Length: 76
Image (cartoon, rainbow, N blue to C red; front, top):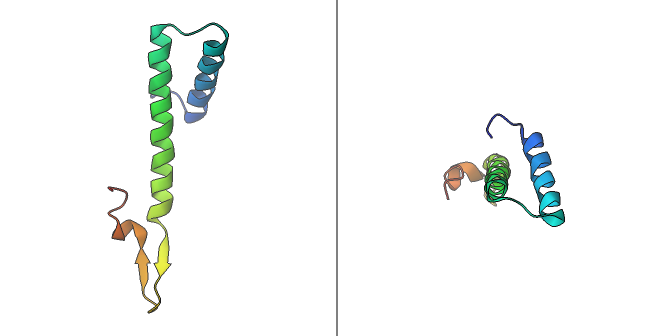
């Protein structure tokens, strides 16, 4: 599944969802759906971590603190 773009994975997730509502999924399709959803969530988390790691906080004393450095670049 790694050869698919995220846009293609989302389209496939939607296809499988609609099929599940209309007629149900095979066990193979259920496994594919779970793997695609997991990849999607991991992608969202990585993007959010990247954004949070680039946020700087200006403290009352004027010092600048990077959240990525403070919290270990998303390792928590």
